[in-house]
Image 1 (tube, rainbow, N blue to C red):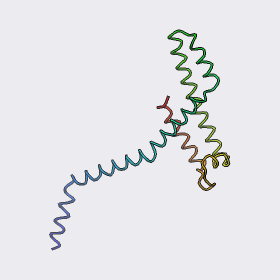
Image 2 (image 1 turned 60 degrees about the horizontal axis):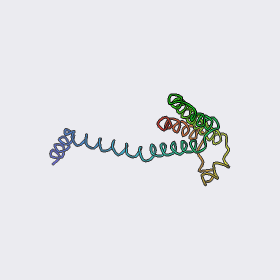
Image 3 (image 1 turned 180 degrees about the vertical axis):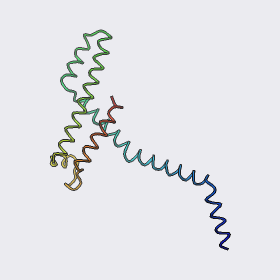
Image 4 (image 1 turned 30 degrees about the vertical axis):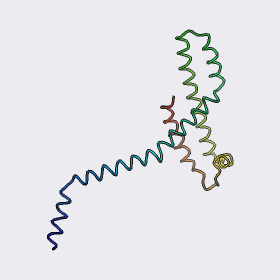
Length: 142
């Protein structure tokens, strides 16, 4: 009886098709989980930050947009690139400011915005990591 069990186990281990299929399935599940649990949240946060900057542009962007009406096609194109660059920088500065507030322990504002307790707030390291990931995700947004 033990010979049949050993034989069956040896044949199972010899057949790698099932093992390869199982690893592909695990990899696909892991990829889907990372996408939904992390990447989508990072992209959504980056879009939110970009939208905030577009809705509340710095004075320089407003001035450049006003000047664009008096420029030729080439000038408007250059002004558009400048405004995009300034909005990108403005968004990064906004993220850095939020990271510094969290890292410095300005917990009252963060807690009221998040609606949580002090135990729920992220560590300074997590805040810096989130800021870095948002900054990287913004490269696709602008």
